[in-house]
Amino acid sequence: MRASLPQSCARAKFEPMEIPFALIQFAGSLAAIFAVAGLAVWLGLGRDARLASDAEAHDWAEQVAQGFAAETVAIGADGKAALLRDTSGQIMLLKQHGGHFAGRVLDGKSSAKTLEDTITVDSAERRFGAVTLRIKSADDWAKAICALKGQDNA
Image (cartoon, rainbow, N blue to C red; front, side, top):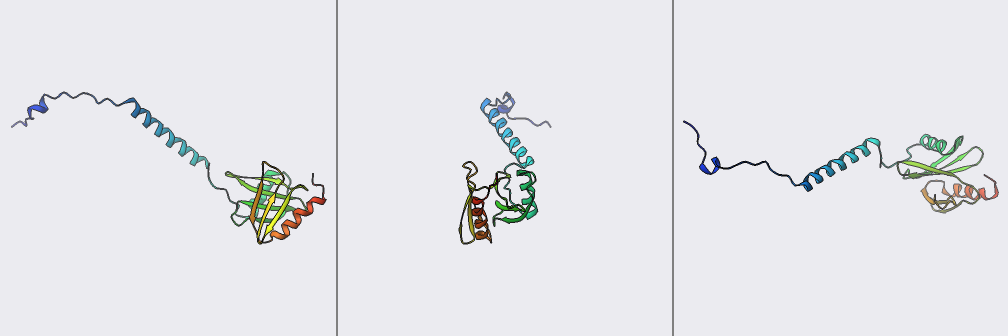
């Protein structure tokens, strides 16, 4: 016995399905977006940088200013900023900048304001801006930054 198809199926012509160009373009764009996102993850772009230890803050300070050997470090409670002081009394302010840290050695133009355990340091550089940190010894750091006004740290 032979299986027979209904006559309506037997006479039907099968034509290749035509895919609209817009659908192909959409699929290609979507694939490209996923490829770029995967590349960004693989390169570590977009991750949130945090200072986890004094040693890490030392490393970033050395990258910012060659030869800056910090002896005292105060890392903000959120790990996004730090203050470092070297043996000569210079003070560096580090702050998160994307997945890295940027820093400035403070000078007599810099200022600091405290409120309880919070210090806001203005580097006097408009492009660097002011940075707020929550640290234990905020008053001591503010006094040290204000004392820079009488020194020549250039």
